[in-house]
Image 1 (cartoon, one colour):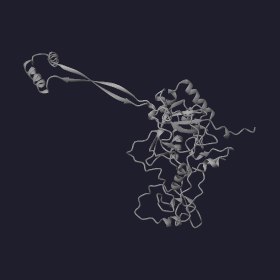
Image 2: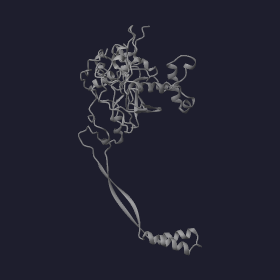
Image 3: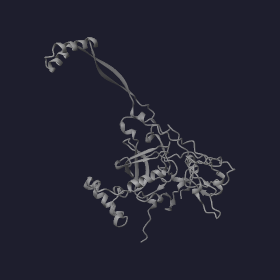
Image 4: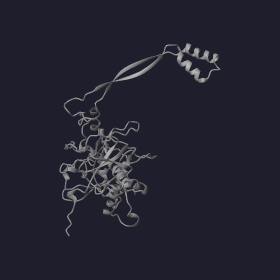
Length: 402
């Protein structure tokens, strides 16, 4: 089992709050993991086939483009011009409208002018951020969020994610701590009022600031994804830690293992932020299949994830399942060409889901065998995110003994 790969940022949460008189001590610092370069192309690199990246030795080249603005200025003053027009209207009321306009145009002598302005053109490579523009988030920071949001208090896992609800009475945190279990030892996490702050409780990591609803959203290539959502494995660099068939509910999320064993992904893991910084919206507009993730297809049903306080991994996986789990409309199916219809129908027959009303085509049928989550990356069209998918990982395929 890949315990060493998960331990720094997820999976094992051995620390708990057993005494409110003992201050919380942060976990040891674990730096970000250095991974091989991603095989997913950069969305900005497609803007120019000759542009360089900021990580190259030669600096980007800027050019200047001259733009011409044609201006016109009347040689007669506004006062005399108005007076002339008014006089002619009084003297020639009997003339037709067309003759009047023609005479006004002839009486006005315009002097054309051309204004030239040089505007500096940016190299498209300058839009692509440097790999070292923002320091990677330490793995221990992701885990610190789990301890903060889902601490184990007096032996019971509780939800302590802020903000706390507005109450008319003052809470006694020691009383909540003492009554989190019944006299018989039965846990009652619902008795804990979330959002509590105390020296003995894990604090909110300073890495994630509160979401400013008025601040502009960062571009996908400007944020860092949670290690659970991207390629963060050393043993299998082409895979994510998550083993999940997106046609199955999110309670069947597992950690990828070497020997084919399954370890459940818990609430402590999926409560982590999906990105740093926190974002209120994530737009998934494309999908791609392994091994060539640079061949990206427009998603017929774009996914817009939203969360006022910032999107978590749980929000992300729930959004995927809800989107691809919807039944396919007849009108949608009829818009596809014959090849697409045949491909989706074969996929539907190959992956039966039951009988009667359950045996209906779903959106996931367009994916064929590529129904296992492989990661997330900025889309090449720069509109949002691309969902990386593939078949079942080979190390998880069991040989049929018969």
